[in-house]
Image (cartoon, rainbow, N blue to C red; front, top):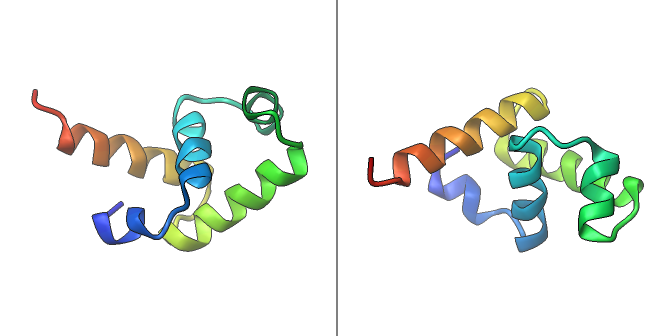
Length: 73
């Protein structure tokens, strides 16, 4: 995920993406953020489109890669 793509995500989409990267299901994400599963699914759809990711695993991997690049290891 490039900074350009990350900038296109809303704050809520970033929250959902973080939880996807942690391996949570849509139902778990919904409960954690107090939103419906259908709303989570809409966010996931928007995230995949904006990041041009093939699937949620790809989006999660992009998120992890970007965060590793930003870390001070």
